[in-house]
Amino acid sequence: MAIPREIIPIASVLSNCLHLVIQIALLLFVALIYNNPVNKHWIWLPIIWGFFIIFVSGLVMITSSINVFIRDVRYLVESFNAVLFWLVPVFYSFAIIPPAYKEIYALNPVAAMVMALRNILLENSPPGGHIMRNLAFVSCLTFVIGLTIFRSVKRSFYDYL
Image 1 (cartoon, one colour):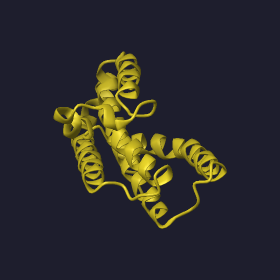
Image 2 (cartoon, rainbow, N blue to C red):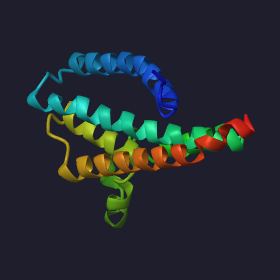
Image 3 (cartoon, rainbow, N blue to C red):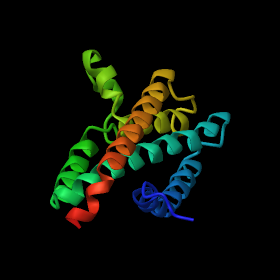
């Protein structure tokens, strides 16, 4: 039985999920240490991480497809990750974002994930509906776009490799 070629980039994401599981365990451990007990909203955590894995899988299919033709995509991805890190409310509150930009800002799936995790783990409240809607929409859209790009260019991979 042949393995679909679309699984190859996704396999790299799933293999790195081992690191994610370790990080999640540490995050939950720290949350418990700082008196944030398990509550009914923790049921959202696997859903949030699932959407994040879907988003990353889409990005991997896009960038791996481009990387076959342009070898320096790695440097663009590293720069993009640095910018994305500073656009995520890890070290600052989402409340300081001007109201005119909040909806656009919430389209960043990494920011949406952080805001949802902050709601669940720090505030003991469910993630906002708009946050989950944006996270689901952008994650699935990125995955579909990545799968479409990967499938459309995979025939020419052998010519460039």
